[in-house]
Structure formats: structure tokens, C-alpha cells
Amino acid sequence: MSEREKIIVWHNPRCSKSRNGIKYLDEKGVEYAIRRYLDEPPTKEELKALLQKLGMSPRELMRTKEKIYRELGLKEVDDDEKLIEAMVEHPRLIERPVVIKGERAVVARPESKIDEIL
Image (cartoon, rainbow, N blue to C red):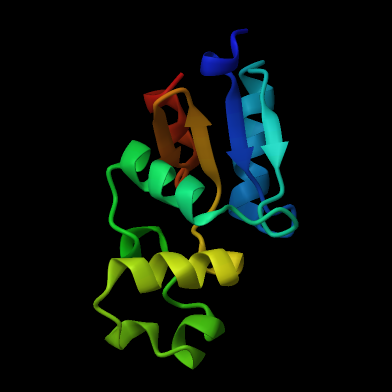
């Protein structure tokens, strides 16, 4: 599998939705690499590239029900750069799991959305 076609999963093992995404890939026999994004947070550049692949705004990728979202007052923030910086600083804010293949990506909720990029 070429580097360009390699599947990468931004995974949080403590999240059932994230575990379901991994299980779905396993059941399909798909090879992938795991990035534990809470341990290895994305850079600002990586997040911007991901948002482009997803075709999403920063807020659409955010877990708006997280306590840290409320604590940081992010609901009132209307600046994409600041939202991206918040996700870099607090990767828990990033929706999961994210499955990336080449120039395409999906937030695998439900996990069947992974089929869109396979």
C-alpha cells in the first residue's frame, strides 16, 4: 500500500465510537495505522489540512458538548484560527474517530461512513 493510500485513524481507545471504527476496519480486513491523537496532538497545519480533506469548518469538527468547550467559551468564538488553536491545545475537542486516506477523510460516525473513502 503506497504512503498516499495508507489509512490513518485518529483514535481515542477510551471512546466507544472510536473503538467501533477500528472494529469496522478490522471486520473489513482493511490495513490501517493508528494515531492516538490525544498522546500525539496534531499541529495547526495538520488540522487545517484535515479540515480541507473533510470539507468541514473547525466548529463542525469540534466536540461541542465537551466540558472544556464550555470552559473556554468557544461557543462565542467566531474566529476559525482561534478554534483550530483550541483543538491543537486541547485535542479532546476533536470529534472522533477520524479516518484519513490520501486526500480524503471522514468522521466515522456512524462507522459505516468509512465506506465513503475505502
